[in-house]
Amino acid sequence: MATNPVFNGLTAYIQEQRLPLIKEAVLKAKSASLFNLQTDIKTSAALNLLTTDVKFGDGLACGWDEAGTNTLSQRILETGAIKINMPYCDKEMLKY
Image (tube, rainbow, N blue to C red; front, side, top):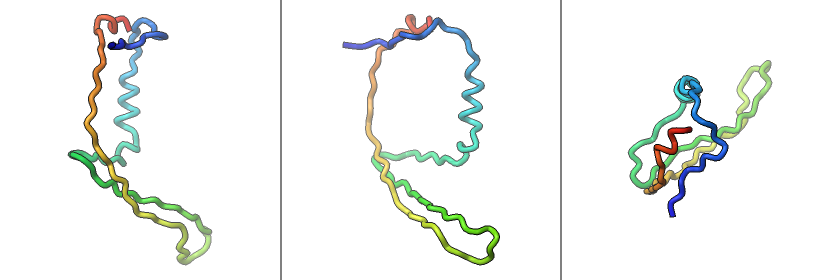
């Protein structure tokens, strides 16, 4: 048996001008420039990881004092075929 979306707790539609805020938060975030998009993965792919444990030293001292650790590892990304079927009535959703 198909289930319809639940509209409990929603009020009638009111334009809230939310799109500019979402655009600024998602597209202009400083961290967005650090992300790498990994495409064309058919079954699985290795994701290379670097974990760093930083140890802060005395900033007033000269010289080299190696501290902390760096660990290289991998995580395997596996894809899968998914399918979602959900009924929506656009006439019902127009109110919200």
